[in-house]
Length: 295
Image (cartoon, rainbow, N blue to C red):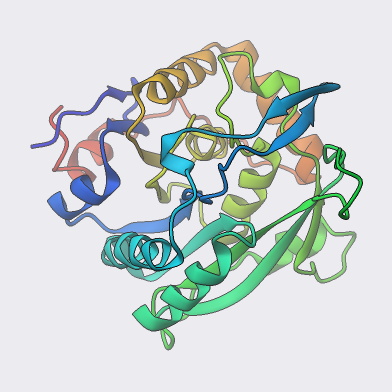
């Protein structure tokens, strides 16, 4: 049995502290959706601007630049493990930049996934390029793929159309980067905004779905999942970030924060959010569905 680092009172938010490549082979549970924000391998001493200050953009040893063949081998291994974790009709979302996203796409194809879209996330508030020798870096890419080519996936087409002014939503999403109110418990250097994860979750899962994040960071995926009535398992090897994840989940235990965060998501995503309550009872269901966790 695997002992979780943290589990929420309603068992809809579960955290494991350890290496994804070591933990994933230890259980056979199938998830409805996976969101992965793997290392981009771009930490090589570069600088950027944050809040008007020049800062180093090195994220940590886990993001250090490595040879391309090592990047390919790493992506092939974790994507292979994740494929085993998906239900046959499940989908996976992977974020990246040009540093890693082409390798990810090639590995997805090699492993038998079907790529559905490549979303371009156009940040509405990107940091400036201080060298003035390049265009400002203002986008990231998010690949959406399903497990099997011939098994249909879930897509909430009507909701996505509704929040896009009753027009088909395109694969270019103009959304802001992380806001100050999302960093009250601390900040992960590659933290994604709740608005982005909320759109992803609303587009590709139904209420009650189980979502896996194999590179959890500060668990934006899990916070968005719980605010939207979904259930979550996150894996993160850095204990300092798992501690932030735990604090963020405890933050929304308070009803005033829960309501405030849901309203902010509603304003960003521009969608009516169903009145599901994360404090409703899924306890017995969670015990049955996660037999590999030691409760």
